[in-house]
Length: 372
Ligand SMILES: Cc1cc2nc3c(=O)[nH]c(=O)nc-3n(C[C@H](O)[C@H](O)[C@H](O)COP(=O)(O)OP(=O)(O)OC[C@H]3O[C@@H](n4cnc5c(N)ncnc54)[C@H](O)[C@@H]3O)c2cc1C
Figure 1 (cartoon, rainbow, N blue to C red):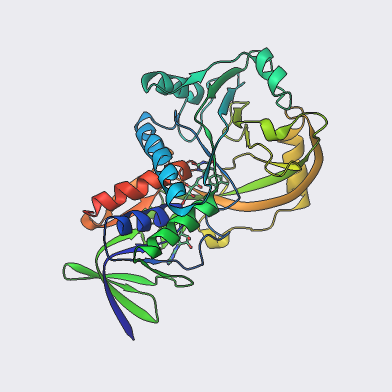
Figure 2: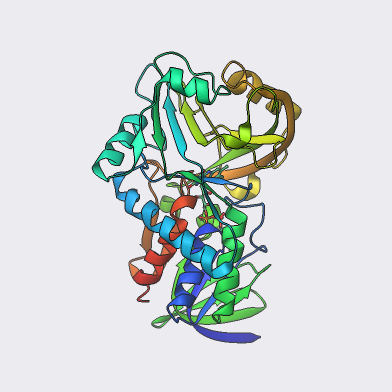
């Protein structure tokens, strides 16, 4: 049986793991990244063409610095890889709910976003509904809607970002094992042994960035902290005669008191469709139990309950529907903790639906916590 020895093993190479592997390699650590699939893939939480990025993150003021740092890092990664990862389109946050609208565990999400932007010097404006409807007639906003517009917001290409960081890490000497599932992690004195079945790896430090599958490694009490919630992304055909969807910013819109009274969307990348989605908090126990198919009935319900009466300039034709999932914590915050009090073994869960934009900086934080 093969036996390898490295400084740090990173288990899981999605958004967080690929960023961590890249940052550790950059700082000179001898690292091995392991994934059960071949990232970027379509079975975790980091696929689907685009992710929104914004700086005034209503989820928590403590995340603003991470978002800002990630923007700097995405620029650096673009420069080093020659790949386009970030597009600045500006972003809209719309609240037309009649009661305080909550999102990702943060009550009064719109007001928080505005407050954090003001506190943290983030460029923004508050256009009124008339102005917005004239510029972006696809969004049918009720009178009285509150609109926050941020200049630096935009979208990221998640698959490109992951691939770029893995490629750069490899160039700097990182080893990457794909289609390799970590079966067990065992302490061995001051070190750890990572068992992948066909080999055992000895490492001084370990980062578990396994997304929703992190539950496989947690004791019962901690498993319960994480809820696996299926999400569906829809690509809907546009009517370019009505409005030019290529010119739209990214947008998020809370329109009612329930968590699922929410829509978000992206500008059209191909001139033919836009990607639009809502959020769902129905849970399953484990990612392997997720229904990966999207039924015609589900598509119909999405159209009738979310799109109809709110978005114009779309044809009632969904060209593609893709399943992804959130790993949701009770308060919507990320978890970055020592496993059983061991500072050399960290586990991280940075999903809850808003983790991608922070992942570049989280990789840097994790590398620092590992002493690099
Ligand atoms: C539909 C959707 C929309 C989203 N929109 C946004 C957005 O607009 N903006 C934003 O900032 N965030 C958004 N998010 C959240 C963001 O995408 C996630 O926070 C982030 O991608 C999570 O990355 P991760 O690395 O934690 O998990 P993953 O990408 O799932 O990576 C975990 C990896 O671990 C591997 N793995 C697991 N177990 C093992 C094992 N035993 N052995 C080896 N490998 C293993 C898996 O194969 C996987 O590759 C969205 C998420 C979803 C699902």
